Amino acid sequence: MVVGLLAGLLCLVGVAIMVGPGLRRFFGIGRPRSRRLTPVRRSARSSSPAELHPTTVKALAATARLLAMLKEHSLERHATALRMAGKRLQVDEAAGIMAMRQVLRHLRSVRLGDESDHKIFQGLVGQLQKEPDDRAEQLELLPKN
Image 1 (cartoon, rainbow, N blue to C red):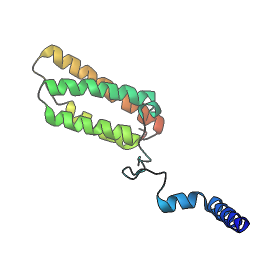
Image 2: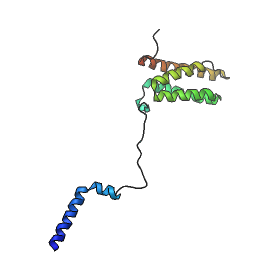
Image 3: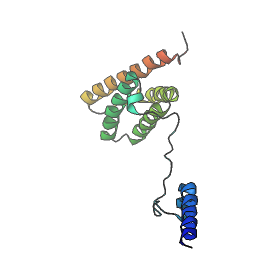
């Protein structure tokens, strides 16, 4: 009788070992109930600053300085357009360059009250125009004259 019980017990242990991880999942053993892992979705076109071209990084730095100046002079509409073009430049470089060129066309007509601020502003606009244009030539986005 003892031998029969021992044989039956060994058979049950063998089956439990074969089923293994499936048995743990079936009973919910070993996993936290309150936390569900959700996959992190990342856009295929988005890139981190480390993945951006150095010319694009320079353009984004000039964009940040120009944004601060526009906000300082209460030109929120222009600042918003420039911020959106900068974000597009980070996500999709080609579309961002075209958006940045369009925003810069509007910024050329902006006149600041203080002459020294206006000179700095024009210098930043010129720098910001040069960097995306250089990158657009590298990507062959601009039509050849």
